[in-house]
Length: 124
Length: 215
Image (cartoon, rainbow over all chains, first blue to last red; front, side):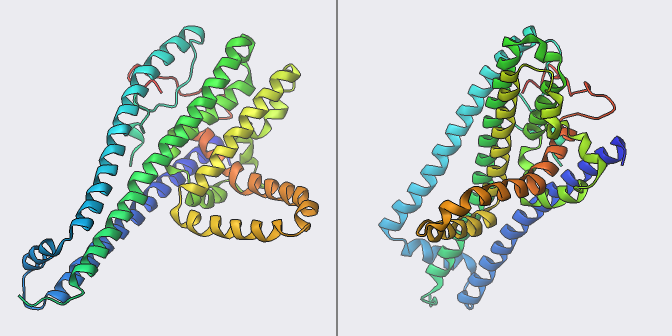
């Protein structure tokens, strides 16, 4: 196998992995969404979905509401922390790479974005 | 309005499962990728510092092989997982000559002309890189994490109760490491090296950074 053939196989494999991973997680989400719709429909009888949601909201207990808020707050906190970390990455990474290039002009790159995320050109 | 009594809990449970799915397959997965990239950046920084102290290393094939592979892992971090191990094994058959395209597998050979302390430090960086890759394969897959870790913990707990562990452990460890190198590390090294921009034909044709892409 020559280098071109190997490079082709590597990129094909990488693309397949990406597609299968995306399919798996989206299929799971869609499957769960379908289950949700089926459950609501089967339990609702002749009533509309909106009525069920109104009834559910009416049934919410204070402790459950606090638990949901706690979970949502945790996720929001994590997202803000991630945003902050990426911002720090951007400021420190840019500086580091420019300083490293002074020492090693042939410095190679991972081709990630300045915040350390996957290069849009590498995304499928 | 007449509503089935289990409607509330059923819908609420399903919504919780949907949110957990999002948590595991989006948020946690992104976190693992970021964590893996952070550790790879640390190793690449360490490699750079090593070369800065020994400038001849910047133009040495061993440095280039190590850096290119690290760049590849950084670049395709989000695709490292159980599936890439399986598919990677198909690309890189163990008896295939293409494994020579991953010079990191020949780091010892490439670094023969370097001082012994540099060789040791390079090998140490490579070993830690492989350890991080192994952890990424294990922890980026919720299915693997949910099945293998409790299973391994149970086996270890059982083995730890007997003296057998102390007799078998060294051999078991060596056998495990050899299997991991062949089945997990080698295919992924080749994928990373190829995606990092390395070829055997153009040994120094690594991907040079653009101004907008500084990672």
